[in-house]
Amino acid sequence: MHVTLMEESWRRIDSWLAAHAPRTFASLRPPASQDAISAAATELGVEFPADLVAYLRHHDGVSPGERGFVSPKEGGFSFPGHQPYTLAEILSSGRMHHELWGRHGEDLPFEGYWHQDFVTFARTSSVDALVVDCRRGESFGAVGEHAESEGTSFGNWESLAAFLEQVADSLENGTVMKVGLSYVPVVDDGMLLWEYAPERRAEPRSLFALALADPVIAAPGRTTSHATLNKTWPSGYDNFCLTFAQALDETELLRRFGALPETRRPRWREEAAIPDQRQDPRVLLPVVRVGTRGGWAFGIEEGLHLFEGTRQEVLRRVSRGTRAVSVSYQGKSGPISVSLFDNGELVTRYDTRSAVPHDARDPFEVFPGLPTPPGQEPTPQQWQERLLAVCHEVVRRCGIPLPPPGLDGELDSARILPLLPDNNFGLPEHNFKTLVPDRFTALVDAATPERLRRVLAAQMSSLATETGLDTYDEVAAALSLLSEEDHPGVTDDSALDLRLRRVHAEAQVIYADWKDRSVWQDRAMAARALADALNLPAREALGLVVGRRQDPHWRQEFRKQLTDD
Image 1 (cartoon, rainbow, N blue to C red):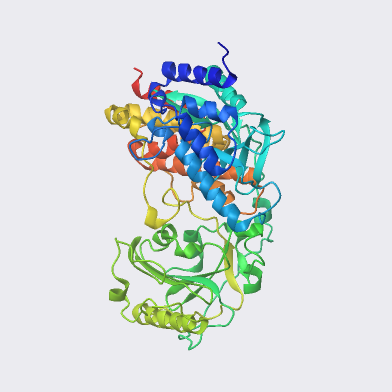
Image 2: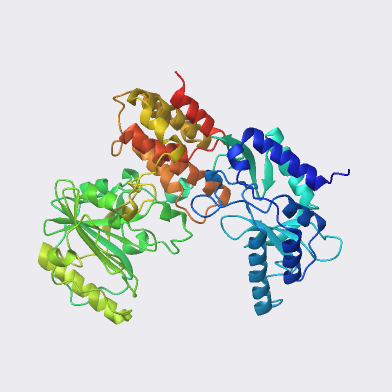
């Protein structure tokens, strides 16, 4: 009896899964019926290639997991980066594309983007997909990759049988298979996981030389005069943040903001401005101009970047041992925010966009005269009026001069090396820690504190090596102490803190070459993980560390470290 390439490939895949990943093997559904396959092809108005029919006659996709959808993390079978469709899902996807085709016809982004005779049989977690070409002609039966931003491309697999053969080869040999990205098969706890196989990347280009291009000039002494709240806000201030700290001077305010001493000098407003903050490298290190007024130090930031004075990490540090108030305004269409901190603790926060944080007082209790959130979108003039009302209430409650004098003139200033975020994403309202994957929870709970410290140190060292973070002397020194019970944390403005902040800043530049940026982003998350590892109990820090590992086989390594004597 003749055995087709499709049948042989499925036999090899089934045998390998049964032997090495039985939980994944159990997720494969029984065959689809010939009648159902024929009916689907008729409804879609195409002829299914023999390989597609044979593919569905062997397994009709994958059974949904406990959450109601296919999840490789629950053991569901998948192709590299893609979840296989059932026949019902193939038909549903085809109906949707036919509807779009009927609505738009040939009006697609570019030639070859899509064709109504493409049949989708697997997709990523987004909208990218694998398709079978059902157009009659030389390409009939070929497998292609559809990417939303790039269209549909063929050339890697002449048939679905050839695609399945490559899957079988990859499983049996443990080799990389490229489907858009490169993946390698990994088995963990009886389940098949296709792990991204990172390629060795060159050291990324640093943009700090451009960010520090300003000439260094010694800062002069400075005095300020008294003033009262203006009836109108100074013109041209469409994006700004003013941060006030009681009983501090300019030098201490700059230090608490995270200023780089070598960049300190007097700057006119025009000198601090960046023509296009979305493109200019200097946005890597934003400028804060400072002064004093009536017992308060103030700092002003302008531009289209995230204002340091709106970040809770910064305001906690600025307000230590004193009080700090921040007022920000982002454009003629708002929004407006006010934050009040006392001795490192949030008192209240007012924001026209979002609700009050659960751990803060009602802002209308602290500032009774604040304008209530608008029922509809205010006009630019109404936003200006609301800004004046906010400033008036802050002046009345705190005695702060708004706006302070001299904003248009020359003020002491420096470039800021932004503080590390408090949490994984830098968003105070999402301040949570990454948990260890569920399958490891029992092992972690059973481990002694000493073992957890050793495992954390080993995993963090591996992550630092994978991302290049361990190439910095400050990081290498910290890693060597991580397994000790009394290891030091990350202290403000230490050599390690400055290094981690610098790495994090490099990752924020949106216009950098994407290869450089991806390296910096991975390195920045490793820096965040190291800060957690040094500052938090090992149990709390482990989740983010292992969650950023790049070695496809990290799970086996992690499990062995938790259980070996």
